[in-house]
Image: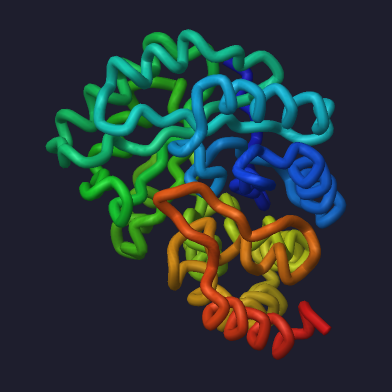
Length: 297
């Protein structure tokens, strides 16, 4: 299988809303904003895309629209999640049209906290029916269970379908174990914006970012510097964004980044229940941090 490259900056695209409906005009503007900012690939319907609040029809519409706007300019990843039910995820993989996409990304099963063997068998069942390469997604803060380094490495060795892991555990030692022992075809991608530079110093190839929805140029430049081993320059840009990150997550993701994008004039901060829009207090603090870093006048 020819493996696509997912080095550099990926963006976990938000799904903008207007009057509770998907705002496709805003989505087109955001896609163009990120591409103009120099990102290397896009992830549609990840966690930041609020895919779990969209109907199956809406998910299909977002995927088709994104593919049609991008027109092959960068690689595309489809976020596909099955919550805590492997059979549901397999059904989605088989029923969604993935033409024009280069990979899928899927988190480990949520809620029922499977053991490592269950996580392994879940992914192996999915890869049997998936026509595309798969990016594993370890985000224990959401799923309720950590996918261990041993499980990630076992999957990477047992199927060439698994090409990378988006690591958002925050456990540097675990990530370093994966980087040390991974097969050559397999990559590690940062799933935590604030830890991207240190993870890249250890061997990660880039990040799938939240903040790059709003600040694609700065984030992409930071990743480019890190890829060139220019860590002094990369750290300077990382520090420029550092105090913004907490305000992006204080009331949930993508609540915060949508607040930032409203401040920057890119879209409204509307979200779907059970999320609620960023509060005025948090929005004011976020605006202050954006101004301090010269992202907002």
